[in-house]
Image (cartoon, rainbow, N blue to C red):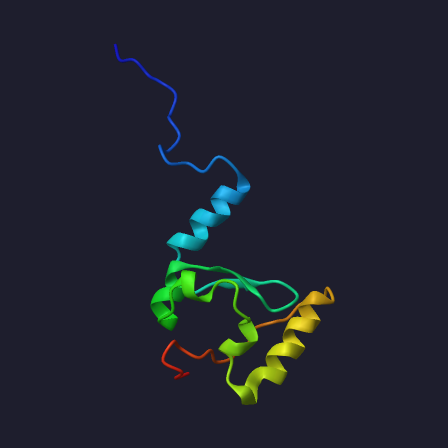
Length: 103
């Protein structure tokens, strides 16, 4: 005879939805950041650090509009205003400046 036991959850399972979201953000290969209505950056994941060459400690709290080249800022502002107004922004592509100032 063999003994069966209930499966155990993963040892590092996040305790909350916020914990799960944080785990996803930090393990994805996609550069992800968030900002609030005043354009202040509130999150900057590890992939963003690698991709853009700027550490989270140096970028969180700064204005995200400064990340975009001058000629694209109007489009970025329009997309953000659309999203903040409750409408969907479908597939928006833009450029972001790296830490060295290059797109």
